[in-house]
Length: 100
Image 1 (cartoon, rainbow, N blue to C red):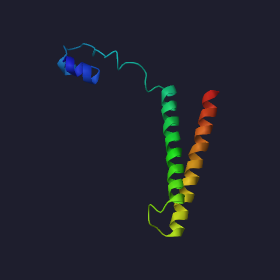
Image 2 (cartoon, rainbow, N blue to C red):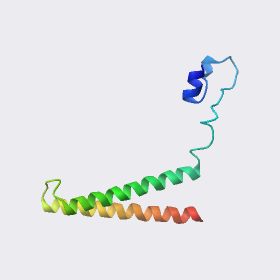
Image 3 (cartoon, one colour):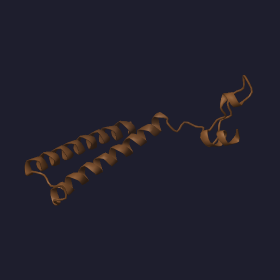
Image 4 (cartoon, helix red, strand yellow):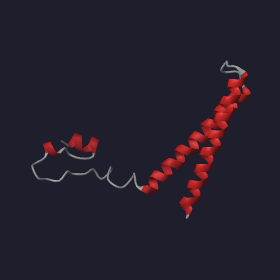
């Protein structure tokens, strides 16, 4: 029972006495997934996507790592750059609204 409480943050109701409240783990309690924290997570993931998009575009521009026709390469570069710019704009808008 203590292993379940430590690992999962609560004691399964079937393991406790009837009509008892689950004992919550104080290390897992709290509001980690609150609105404020979720915005930080969304912004972090958005920045990661922007960096990856620009990185892939730079790799396609500077190397012949992936063999493909030139027109396909240009389309891929345009898609990566446009999506990276779109996500960067959304992050900027999110930070701007987050400060207000």
